[in-house]
Length: 340
Image (cartoon, rainbow, N blue to C red; front, side, top):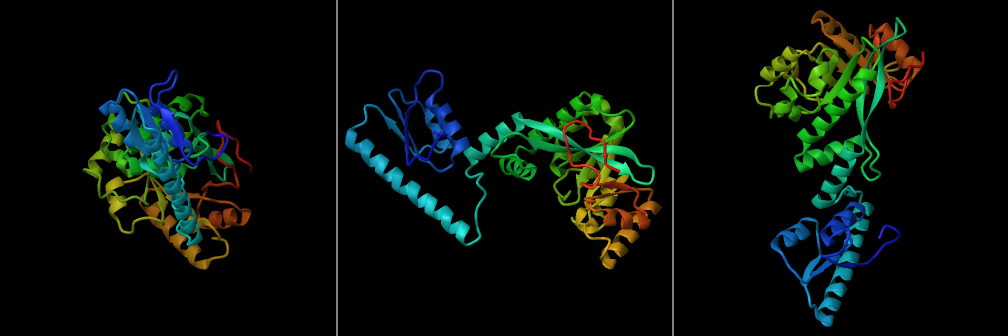
């Protein structure tokens, strides 16, 4: 099936080694459109429900009359062609939907992505002292159809599995922590929905055991509106030893809400402010003012997305000494040494 494209697939449900339902699940991980007709001599409600869940085209009880099977194949083929034309039309008009497709295929790919997940680390440097301050942990996966972190997070949100994904990430960071250079902070991204996950506050959770060296980054791009007692949640995390950072500052929700609820020790300037800061007086003014105000609030500032020596030089002039970006190192397995 992986070796080519097919108009329709017909399979039995009862087979050795792999059932028809398991086969259907594997098909959906590879192709979200191809119609699959399932046949069985022992129909069950459970298998029928799973067939529907994974997008089976038709569920036929044996013995199947030849003309009925042929009619099902013809109808499936025509509808498959129509589905292909629909996708072409959407691409033509610039409204191409993600290849992630239907819920069943999305579920299969997300599970695979989490099973094949690993963490990359990118250094955060103290430029003036030419030393590493810490490392940000960044989600990666070897799942070929979902290796973009944004796709993985989007799938978890759509499927209501953000907590599960967050636990996977935190467990992997905790597993990598013993290999991190001594005395350096580990920055871990936290979806705002994770603040509603009881596991986050467990002293027995893997990441809690290394909380003293972890900075949890809560993005400004996601509203805290759905978090129950955000201030209380942050207090519990700090009691465990975690520090808090606001991520993507300057690219998310406006206002003071995130600062008053999170009371962060660190603020990370979004790369949209950093990109081209050396040639843009308005960006320079905003960065300078943000840095001054954060200093007055005793909040450390990290400028992320630094890609050029000119950006680095201007940020240093503006008082930003904590820097992160491709100029120093791309995210890599292990804990890379930055380029100075």
